[in-house]
Length: 83
Image (tube, rainbow, N blue to C red; front, side):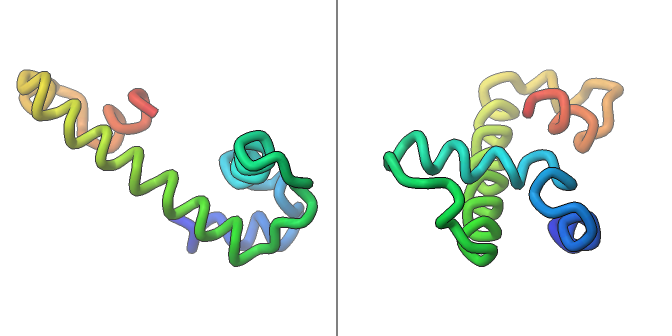
């Protein structure tokens, strides 16, 4: 997904990509730092961590609620709704 978001980041900066501007705010709140000090590789790393944790949470949701696997939703729509 970051491959598709990168052009929007290049054109409009962090405001061009929804979840990319949330990461520095969360990081600065948790670690009491200035959000402007986080560089692009750090943002990209945070983006991958958030996506990975969301995927792990979604996996456990599918294990705990097995009927979600048989719903008429496609998995990507269901994942988007959960997130």
